[in-house]
Length: 242
Length: 291
Ligand code: SF4
Ligand code: SF4
Ligand code: SF4
Image 1 (cartoon, rainbow over the protein chains, first blue to last red):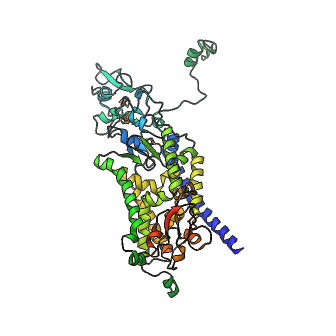
Image 2: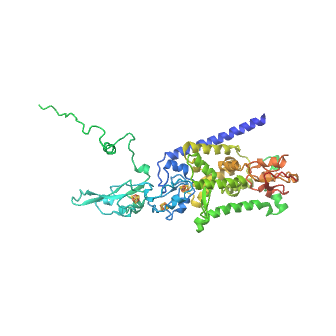
Image 3: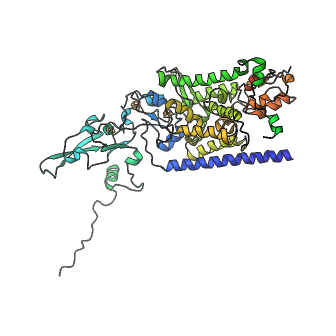
């Protein structure tokens, strides 16, 4: 009897210790997941929530990268420890056509279906500082535009009238999300002390329309005709003429 | 320490009698082989980044040897599966190879022969003995099994391999190969825990990875046998050297099999080393001979 009681007590103790540790771990996990995603992931990386359940933290992608772009996060980097990431301003992704990092990944955390590097979405470039971007001052820096591997597609220069001089044009660098891979070459090359164009993780770079939201003109295009009466007649309300 | 306790735990090293009887080398044979194996494993991983000799790439979680042989940690892969990610073929193959190997060679052979944390916790245990630190909190040994369950449950619940966020084992190995950051603090915590808080706390009571490999090797072919138990002179040196002393008694003093059946045994072979009477040897599981 005493032996059985001892065994039961031992089991309860063990379960208790484990429950305590598990709880702590769970809370830590929750806390870390609540932080905004900061890291740019390698090409083909699954969306962040899935990536954290798939990546084994082996670093084979890091070893495969010929430019030493990728690193495994160390404890204290502010990125989940052991997962691969890169800092665009330090070494951007050179967009290897054969995508060796994806090929090296044993777990599938980097989606093997990514065959064309131009379809990678590591992040999205955003002009975060229009007040300092030289092109926004009416100068012709254009560096981000020139270094972009998808020049003329991922970044275009949009003409705008220069109000200050009154007679010149401004060439506004404009990122197009349907082409930008998030490689970071623009951020790396920006000539300012602190880059005015930065690649942000998609979650931070993009807004999202309410799911119920429909844009009339797009629906019209899809349906081939207007969904409602073409032009609604509104009563004209004018103050009574006296 | 009372006199009775002092008699039970003489301050001399557990290998002292064996050294006198068999010589320094034979009394440390398996220990030396084990350290060689641990450092060789690490050296293979480090040769690439340090010397540009790429025999093995990656780390213990998943690696590629000579560009052809994939090896993965079955526990890490299992957590990924629990998190709901169907691992790609390479990781599954690698995990299967490792699983078969450890299922035969003794699951916790991983702990004794490969895992880098073993060096840390063995050092803590050695220092603890040298400093004569006795009183401590004792944790239940089964905590690790529960923790193993908890890590898998947490992966399933969160969809992330949560244990990897704190796992000192992968942090130490990855740290040595890819850079530590603050991970050294986690490793230090394990050392201090083992040294000052509770003897053999980490590997012997808490580590879910060890619990996983124990389960994996519960039918292992390679085991330690107390075949010559009749020669035992009750010096207790094996109990004092063994990281899991509870496993020895049934084989040494029981009437049934002379083979240490418990999956908690790490196949470290330290009992073989420290026994001045050469009671122990490596054997296969079904070897029932006693002499
Ligand atoms: S595509 Fe090339 S440069 Fe970019 S992360 Fe992969 S291996 Fe490195
Ligand atoms: S190769 Fe795949 S599993 Fe390994 S660290 Fe890179 S993304 Fe993660
Ligand atoms: S990150 Fe910059 S350089 Fe790279 S594709 Fe996008 S806009 Fe071009």
